Amino acid sequence: MLNDVLKDAESRMKKSIESLKSEFNSIRIGKATPALLDNIRVEYYGTNVPLNQVSNISAPEPRLLVIQPWEKDMVAEVNKAIQKSELGLNPSVDGQIIRIPIPPLSEERRKETAKLVKKTGEEGKIAIRNIRRDANDTLKSAEKEKEISEDEMRKGFDRVQELTDKYTAKVDEMIESKEKEVMEV
Image (cartoon, rainbow, N blue to C red; front, top):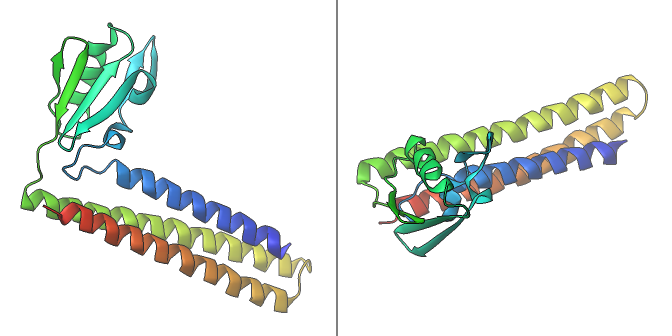
């Protein structure tokens, strides 16, 4: 019982870390990275699909993204989706290719982005603490139902707290690393 609760909590915490990584990847830092466009969806035969499922995305230069839709008809659709996104990017269409220059971030924009990184990281920590609460509630109810002893419950609380500390420390490292990346000129 105790191991199941711990395995579940750890697996959910790992998923929170993965989710946070993908959110951090979509935060614009002034460098061209295909992950920047991960959240953009394009209308494709009546269905909204991720941009990377209808085109090749590459970053041939540090400040340039190149998108090559697989179908000619998709160029205008992809261009429109990028312009509608809240990334503040200005794509230019060059035949079958869309080029997106990534402008360097101003000092003010860097500070705003650093704040966004902190806020996103805090949301990740909250998710991890919610997982801790769920695991502890499960242990309490198991003890109440006499499935585990009070000692096992206390041991479980300690192990869940160790997991929580481990994963919140990972979030802190991720925040620090991303902030450093954002503030780099």
